[in-house]
Image 1 (cartoon, rainbow, N blue to C red):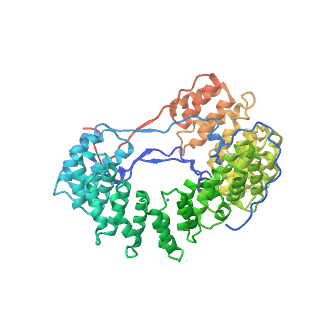
Image 2: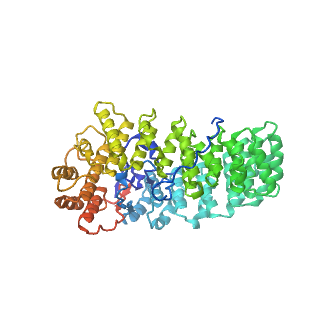
Image 3: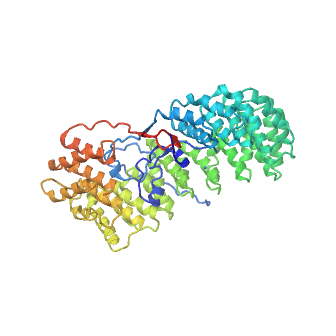
Length: 630
């Protein structure tokens, strides 16, 4: 066997899905474009301004009205046109790990046994099968009276992760003797298994006056989770006694809320009266008790708690009303959307998104200016969701146009996305000026809107805008936002098939060109719509060079190579087939460049592109693993 470094234990179950090196700005704008799944974790988230009235219904779009995409993002067309269907890789596991790990569990070194136990925990969470076969080795370590508590804690965590329920008595005995960390870890697992004998331990603990507060809180939570009604008496005493530490009273209130004894409403009423006299903790306790109540009396109490001046109290009450009586949340939309507390606004937005009415459309448009980015996105998604209803489409467009007129970069950015998705070309005259807006977010959203809203009659205007932006960059006036504006406009020139733009699009083609990779890839992709084999042979050879630049230092960016492959497929020059076939084999059909080559070959010859397969990666570099050779 060999030993590797402990920090290599945590492995990624999937790589970042084509992580885009676009910088922090696009990370803000295109949140959600990245995805990564971590394999495992070792032991241990306004002012009072009236909404402007909607405009008169706007003229219908020229083309049929398609259903809007609710999760629309500011994206690159070269990454979605065409869709290549690449799949995320899955992990495979060396089968010889298990016997080596079992041997290591019987090694005399305690730290080695601990590292193996932690490896088992991480591997199981990442999906490695067959690890339950190591149960006996883990049990032997746990039973050893000479073993350190640190190692026993790691072993116990692994056994719980492997769902070794037959070892519950042994684990319970270890928890009774061991340190607090081990006890909390094991008791969490015993609760998941509903191990009946441990309930007596918890009941005794919550009634013991001098018990450790953290252990008591844990016992309260676990008793409520397993629905142990015998805990009601002790918990009610702790809840109602002002001598009980506040954290324990909160835990007791939440536990009683889950157990839901008949007295809950009475206790909440009593605590509400105390809370009305300025006792914040009493109000917090009272509203927590109603977390699972739904009758009329509970609703009336919740209405009172919503009016409490403390947002922590009001938010709990409003969230419960959203679950059982959303109409009462909607009735308070104006009040809550102007509240400085983010939680109250978030809960209200959830109600508005589920309410397809003109009134809710108006308030969602107002929320496009919310200070919290996720709230603005939620409001935008709500508007697009309501726009799918024919009766509300014009209302959504009118309110979004109003938001675009507000002197607020937040409203303008979100309104641009909504109106672009709804193909509202009436705003086209506004877009060029917004490229000069003081905020980067609006500049980029406007460029993206131009790409999706401009038609052939505005191709020359798009060309002029792209030329102006490029000249600014050439003169040293580039900013991060300017570069992304340029990239979107270059893509627009391709989509508009504006042949006079070829010379401009060739400027970012050389690898040494002083443009960001997004502009270079977008320009290469756009050339695919404009070039023809009969007239542009020399330029087509330059695209082939970009595709083939895989071995130089530094090599060409993957984005540019993939864009070149797609462009060659669209141009359809038979002389490009040799290069496309070469790099299809070299890069492989499960890579962005290789699959782009395969797509182009299919366009040019009709040879079907094989269905994407799930690539596999063997997880190696564990702390303990077999030697690779003799």
